[in-house]
Image (cartoon, rainbow, N blue to C red):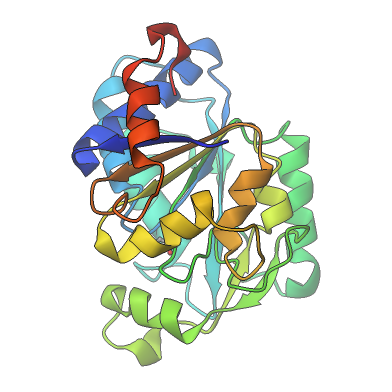
Length: 259
Ligand code: PGA
């Protein structure tokens, strides 16, 4: 089962994940990071900054989960811009080694296949950071997405577009389509780390961690993966039935295990 870690706040969550990533990069300077966008992973990137001081990050490779279609890549809210601003620049990574799904590819129908090939050629993702949508999506795999899906074009739900309207001047500016890693692609990463904060994510987290596995809640795909860490604050954990068990497990965990 997923390891569930309930933390007091986002800063603590960010620190836990950053410790894990920093340890990975010290062991393997050319590790492959699975990068997520949105508000959720920001505390991880912020915490990583301090931990990577003095660490050579020039060989780090990375693949983002998804990208909007129909937005100028130079738009500040395109995910390639977000990754450049929040990850590549502050952590001193080589931009040539960090990729986002090429949503401006003129051959968009096959662009996803080439992205999956590039992930495979890199040896696969070592640690995949994930957020979860209020509708249960991971990446932009909206409800109904196949667990076998690969990187491909998806249509965003109205709920996702409303949730993401805060990054734009109005909902009309939120793109309707995206190129997203599939659930099958995400499940190939060696370690999944799913973060969620706030009451608005409580139902999605309870569904993903403890609900029946169903394509209607794409986050339930994590139950099919052998190494998953779910890190949530108290509010996002508030609908978990086994919360006391998760707390006992984490409190009594051997220190050598990490997350
Ligand atoms: P958020 O988005 O981190 O901005 O809440 C999460 C997601 O949609 O996956």
